[in-house]
Every structure is written in C-alpha cells, then in structure tokens.
Image 1 (tube, rainbow, N blue to C red):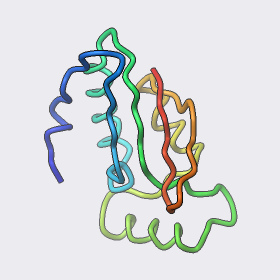
Image 2: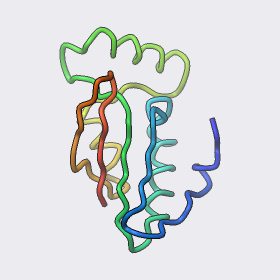
Image 3: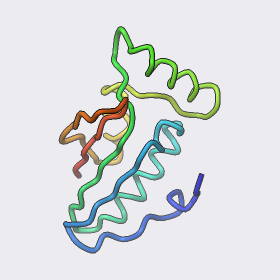
Image 4: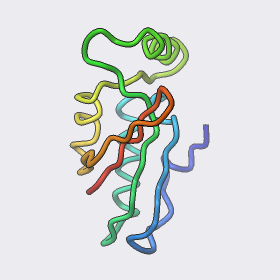
Length: 116
C-alpha cells in the first residue's frame, strides 16, 4: 500500500475538489485510518471538498455472510476490519468528519459521503 497518505495529502484547491478513498480503510486499524483522516483535514484548509469513502458497512446484528467473510479476511490478513455505522462514527468523530450521506450501490460497498 502506498504510504504517502500517512505523510501528507495534496492540498485542496477549491470546494469542487473530490477525494475518493476506495476500499482502503477496511485494511487499516483505527490509528492508521485516523492518521490519514487527520492529514485529509489539514489538506482541506478553508475549503469544503467532497469526500467519499467506498467501503463496506457491516450490520450491527445479523451480519450478511458475505460481509462477514470479508471481515474475517481483514482480521486475518491486515490490521483492519469491516466497520459498522457506529464504528465509522467513532473513527471519524475525533478527526472532525461526519457522514452526511450513505449511498447504496450495486455492490457490497456503500459510498460514505463525508463533511467537515
């Protein structure tokens, strides 16, 4: 995995900028993910870009077997996991981001649209 996001994220140039993170946070523990989110917040300066995280959203109870198998793979092969909505909120809150919208797509993943 590219380690550049752990150092810095390119500066936002306008409110029309878009940051898209596709299936990376599920492979990270909370500390690593928060480092990237902290760098993202620094990159935003005074702008409000669109930020989208394409990742799984696990259910609190009665988890879908497909998502459970991805979760098991993440637990075995990385420091990450498939997060529930509550776990996403807990991850984002200390960095100042909030989920403003969850977009359903024809995939296991969901698009989590963030705002500062």
